Image (cartoon, rainbow, N blue to C red; front, side, top):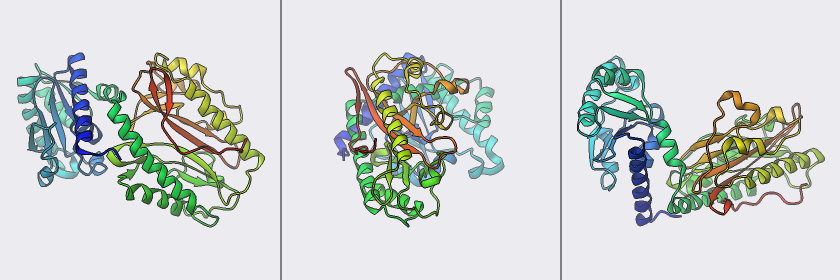
Length: 393
């Protein structure tokens, strides 16, 4: 595991320097971060990451040419002490309804006054915010502080990984692959989906993993259509087990890969082989397209074409960025352009996950495969080491 203090320090330093460089490049002198994943990226600090995703109680102010101030829950300010990225730790002023009830607008005004003072000293009257609600936005506007959306800035900043980040991601990914090996060893007819998911999750947590973002592990008829969550149904011999790890591993890395296994061993039937062959060919074809300079929409136009009986059940995207979460970019199917497809360019240092789900409309089962891939100057480099199935085609 890449978790030595020196390596962690190098990652923190690179991330904060990159973020400040992007702030300067986009003329955004002050940034307010409230999303705990962005907080972790910029500062290296974490505190109840899942809990604070839905309870807005900690945040940070960053000046492009000035200090970084972390506003932390008073009871846990000690967690971030010693982090060289942070110049000052102050008690947070929560304005979330859960924390302060009907006093939210009052607390938002108090916070806005403090933010306005910081902006006056470092931000020329402007502040970018990654996520904001009406109470804080209104309070800032009343003080003539011009707030702009900072979400895109963070997504584009996080999209490019340093060499040290890639090494840390791969080390985290290996812990998930070890957990997959334990899942496969435990797989047997009669085991419930939930019990199988527990094996996968326990294997990750035991190795320093943090939490799952989804529960996408199903077998047999519950693999089609996709996105059904693990349930109590016992697996049957000869069924497909399909899963998407979606695990936050050591270091906060989103270790995201998918595989499909045959429960009980033996030889898959003709339809299972057809589905698996299609999924594998889709992954391999689309991975080969991931080269620097390729546009997102250009890739969409060249992507693997699923057969008509499987196309309506396609996955949500062809590929997506990966880092501390699912990240920019999201590369859409051509059929889904109306739902928000956008253009951009693949760059060296981007880490993306190539997706495939293949299941016929009205069919019994589906195959889920996914590979994390690094974009390099020389082309795509698959980062996983857990093998796909051989001899199924």
